[in-house]
Amino acid sequence: MKTKLLTMVVLSTMLAGCSDGVFTTTTTNDLVTPDHNYEIDTWGTNSEVYEFTPKNNTNKTCIFVMLDSGEAMGLQCFDKKVDLKLQK
Image (cartoon, rainbow, N blue to C red; front, side, top):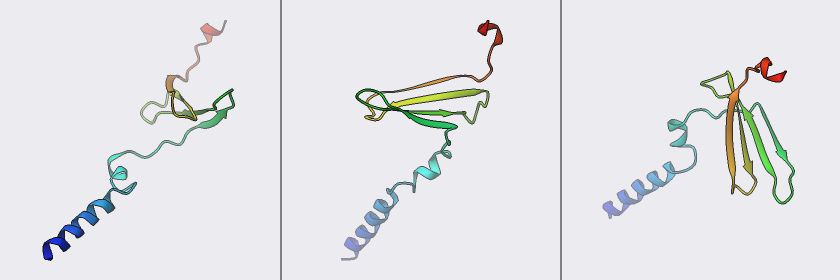
């Protein structure tokens, strides 16, 4: 009987630890708040767009695009500095 009780306590503790946020908050960094986010209304499916500045390189900006369906996504980062020679 004590073995069953101990097993139930251990399993309950393990399952409670699996809830969202218990382990992930200790193993991941803080979430990045996007500089801008918006949705592009396209034919068939919409696209969500997130623009953000990476914490480790503030001279870059990144754009993340994802279809609402989650079937396709992409990420592109580039320098914030504009080369005026290229604009002529």
